[in-house]
Image 1: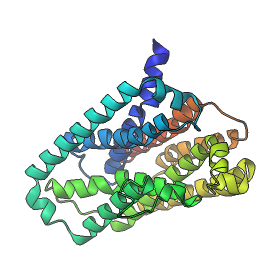
Image 2: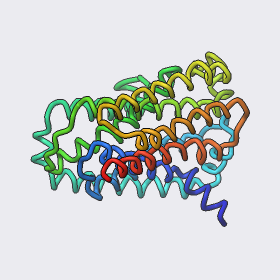
Image 3: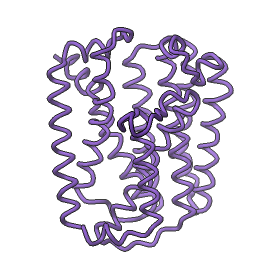
Image 4: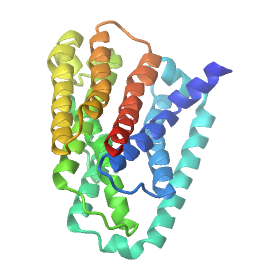
Length: 304
């Protein structure tokens, strides 16, 4: 029974929704702005779960993908499709409520906010080639080395920028230092990109057969760890320290915020050995949740 629940939560992508909410709350607390409304958090939960579920329903027509996750989708086709349908309806209802309630504010969003959200939406749509091929044939997922950066960019945008846009839509007037926003965005972008590259390692053989030139396919697992994962993690650390120094954090908040980056380096090094799908979904994604919790916890030492 416990194993079924674990598979439902992680294979069904519901843990991804939890990560979105946690990272968004971390952003609000670190920027010292009000938390968003429950509507926003519900949408932030449902949208990525629906997005990844839709992406994985493709394995139902594919015979080349063989792992526990794809087998789970094949044996739970009805559940996956019902889940996708319910999530779509929820996203549509929540979006309609937000549109109806804040229509005037949405129309008067600053051009910068429109630009930010348009870029995030465009990247997420083009990642899986969700637009009709007769309209545009770009599929960013097939761009190899760019793939992980696109995923990281979309995640960083959704959890670092979208909360600020939503506050504006909700009529909450907050002045935020753009330098802080950029620093937090880069930190989240690098963290999520490293996470995405580690996930590419489980698809190494499949990507290689498809001639998809990801970092892992180009350099091999060992070189990817040494020359891609670790340097990107260090860039995230530098962005974190710069953010902390700019905000005049004390030693304790900085050390707490460094914990997930240390874990990220440890997990990166552990990838020298082959891991199970549950290691990726629970341990690697779990580090993202720890990052959010550490970011929230660290701010409590600043307020005291």
